[in-house]
Image (cartoon, rainbow over all chains, first blue to last red; front, side, top):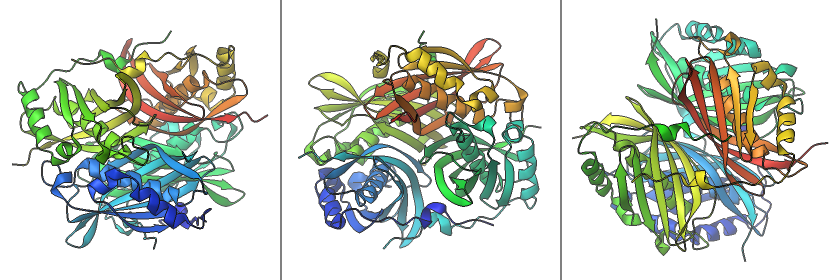
Length: 155
Length: 155
Length: 155
Length: 155
């Protein structure tokens, strides 16, 4: 019998009551995300959903979303999921991540859903799904596994 | 609101009615798995659960399960999950995988749960959780993301 | 004694005499790369070097290159290295890659150097270094390991 | 023109004059490595070479080295390369690694060569090549990219 994922049973508590505001500020402070046209759709403790509407400027040879846009969406969806659990005065940086692109980035919008699976003192591990919204239906486009590190915020 | 994982909604159909027998034969044909003491616990279409009871021979400096045992369990749990969807006459090989070890391999047994998230003609993508069973309770030990390739069986 | 890398001893032969022209066409056909301001600096059999000059539009919170720009540069540097070895009529797609960001993306330019370490019939493996050019000096910014797949070109 | 790898130009200084002795003790303290039959062949600052002679007990279905043996060799070759740069009183644990298996593990022996490419206060990044020795000739079998973390030694 197929078991449920253990990591889906873990509940995370925010260490900063203003986590939502902090994450949104961090999101808005990154010019690259604005350039791409990314939108923050949802933030919850250990979870983040971002949207990336289609634009020709972020496409590849066949008019699909470019792999770089897919990977960036995966990276920051995981990153902000981790950020939601930070104490005040800390920032998060990406140590590394791996992305499997399982289908072309077709459709009108990409959706990135990052979820923390382990939140340590220094390191945080996240898993991310990137979905392609094709005529209103979600299709799996990419999956990623990421390591983040907490660092003291630069003033 | 935290969404369910898209990949958990995908249902896979076996292409070989004898998939369970084929996977068990492939498992038993690998001397390394017997050497480690691994046991096949469950096989379903696109899913495999393997158990690895503790033995000092597969431990590291502190008496925990060695990282090599954790990684091997992750690799083959994903591999046999992919194998369950193969048509007759095909084999599967690991192209690559990435493992995050999120906690030491403590306890009396490791449990590997591999699940296919995409099954293509040539390539299969899987995700794996490795749980440590500590005094009867499951703890997340490692998570992995893997690419497999189907090849024609060598006669 | 520290040995030289085995993969650095492998010499690759192009299967298409017009490989350089083909790669440059593929590069120019990707609007996302133009949007980012990427420049193809060098193409050789199994090797590609790309440059990405700094622009505020691709920065993160501290004014450094955004991780998404670093990852995109890694991905396509490896991708075009693989593309250089394709026979006529084939394309290449990224199956997966993993990037370790080892230092912030500082400086006036990023340099991506992708090299093929194994070129198979269907799958190609590449390694990529991303260097940050800081006051004229190269610093290691990221390293990546990538799997590519050859597919028949869509007409 | 194909450039040399930047990471090959980095020279690492040991922080512990007894690093060689410390690494060998750590190696010998891991029962799993003895069970597999692994041998430490070379240790230098930021570099480690390990050998794994063929034995049927660590093989897969076709009599080649099992993928689990290949991955374990990659993991510990990188791990001990990182260990060689530790100050006294510290240990190293694997945070994560990714392995691409580019050819079957054939032949009489596997050789793992791990090299540090970045040594930070907390995190260390390594790259590893696994070679298969086939009738005396080295063939690339696998390549890996790894993150290690320094921790205070448990007494």
